[in-house]
Structure formats: C-alpha cells, structure tokens
Length: 73
Image 1 (cartoon, rainbow, N blue to C red):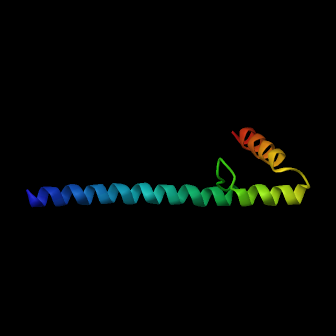
Image 2: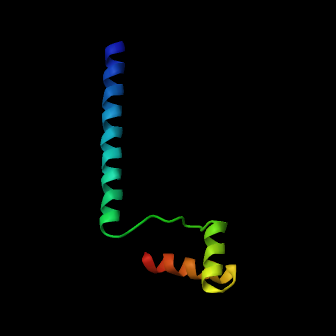
Image 3: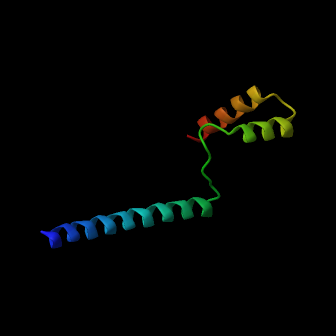
C-alpha cells in the first residue's frame, strides 16, 4: 500500500511539474511578444504615478486604466 501511495505521489508531482513548465513557457512567450501581466486593480502607487505623469486626478487614471484593460480583451 505504501508503494501505491508513493507512486500516486510521484505521478502528482510529475503532473505539477508539467503544469509548472507549461506555465513558465507561456510567461516566456508573453515576454517574447512584448506582453506583461498587470493587476486587474492597480495599486495606489500605480494610480499615484499615473496621476503625476499625466497631471490628472487619480479617478481619471483609474478610468483610463480600466478602459485600457477592457480594450486589451
């Protein structure tokens, strides 16, 4: 029974490794295509930086950010 449990654990670890490898390959391909992952909701630091860079209010930055994410879908 111990051997069966160990074999099942080995299979699960291999599957996770395959999934992890696939995920890492996808992330690498994103970089090659010039893409990146961003949070759905920007951080306060991101909003502040956008506000300062554009000379606009944080609310406007949030509206612009949300519009950009919708456009990317």
